[in-house]
Amino acid sequence: MSTDRYVSPLSERYASKEMQYIFSPDKKFRTWRRLWIALAETEKELGLPITDEQIEELKEHKDDINYEVAREREKVVRHDVMSHVYAYGQQCPKAKGIIHLGATSCYVGDNTDIIIMAEALEIVRKKLLNVIAELAAFADGYKALPTLAFTHFQPAQPTTVGKRATLWMQEFMMDLEDLVYVKDSLKLLGSKGTTGTQASFLELFEGDQEKIDKIDLMIAEKMGFKACYPVSGQTYSRKVDTRVVNVLAGIAASAHKFSNDIRLLQHLKEVEEPFEKTQIGSSAMAYKRNPMRSERIASLSRYVMADALNPAITSAAQWFERTLDDSANKRLSVPEGFLAVDGILDLCLNVVDGLVVYPKVIEKRLMSELPFMATENIMMDAVKAGGDRQELHEKIRELSMEAGRNVKEKGLDNNLLELIAADPAFNLSEEELKKTMDPSRYTGRAAVQVDAFLKDSVSPLLEANKEVLGMSAEINV
Image (tube, rainbow, N blue to C red; front, side, top):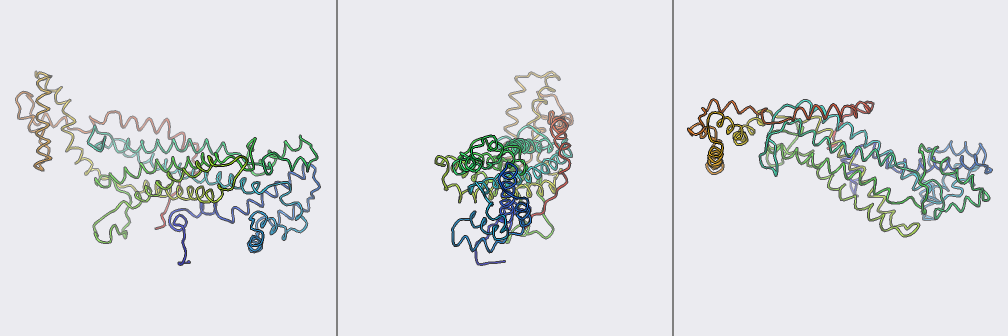
């Protein structure tokens, strides 16, 4: 490996080989040749004098790309598409004259970009489904385990560990809905010429409008698409890239929220991401178990969320039928958005698959706060025992403040129950008060909600996509 030049960490550290290949030069140029074959076949089928022999010659060399010839030619002509037309023609002398016939550079460039984004979205879809499946198993396993909930990161009414996981899951499911919608709406550019008017085909087919109307759909079907965009300039609308990268940014936002929660829970020692036996948490503090995976998710996610600005600005800045100020930006923002999200989802899958829950720590923290949350129940029991509701409310407020001071100022345990038991106005013993300390009494419908969510929303989704489930993810470093 070369160590004397910049190498993207997206390829070296984060993204899978599968996603890297989708955006590789080999994938791009092989797709160009498939598109040239589809164009030639379509033109032949519509009556142009193209022979079966020429088509077969093109097919024979569709994968054995003579890269060196193309590279040398590009040094001369400074045009990547024409360099590859030249290189393909060197391998296919019989078909040389009909390669790229009637097309402009965006025929291969833009159609390939759409094809690649569609395939990349499919990889993301599969990984997203697997993250949802792992979260579903986690939520089901811990649906009834009470835990302290937080609003403003301050102790609030209890929930369950499983219910909290459904919140992460639901956001990923929203992202999946957006992804499927955008992926299913993708269309090819087709072959519309230099300004989108198909003027070259009007010349080739001698004004036969009926034949020209068929070109785009025939090419689309050969490339596995149902349609082409009905109108375009030279390029497909860059609004398409905006929609695609917005989907990636949505996934990144959900992953960031998930990873933040895990980092906070790991700080509380309630839930931890996996930590390998030989893993080092700190170069100085040997005892540390840093949430490295979750921090990496957050870091990459911020990159993707910011990356979404690039296609939006590029789309807004295009002049008339096309300008080339999209090209350099597009070559960076779209692939790197996908590579980063690929790494993010692998990390999410790895984290969820290995989450460690510490019920005793969860219980200890919950029980330290539960007396405050149980005060309404205690007050109702005291009223049943003959107390005055308004008087008791004020006494509980005062005792709660005292117990709070004991915890915050003196570092003592929460002694609210003892204080209440010692007050004759409540007429309740400490033993009776402790019966109110069952955490499951305060989690509301959390477990029921988990069951209903899994049954009604998650299980049908996973059942419909069961053929892609069962993935695992290893992180590189």
